[in-house]
Image (cartoon, rainbow, N blue to C red; front, side):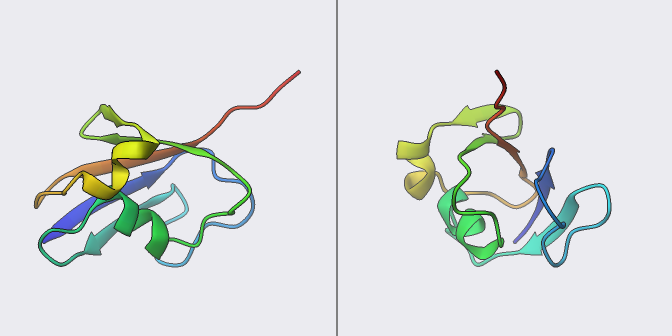
Length: 83
């Protein structure tokens, strides 16, 4: 199946396979989850991310159980820090 992944405001260089705008199309096996996608992308481990599937939030505790479907759009946004 194919899904579209968008990285919003990534820190550092864009991970391999992503265009300059932070978007990539990924081929996944049936039954792949949000957690599977996040483990495949070279994201900084020290950052936490908000994940959305088709605009709906997927909380961290549900990522491993949230199966994706062909055509889904996954958006990953690092936590915003400030002070």
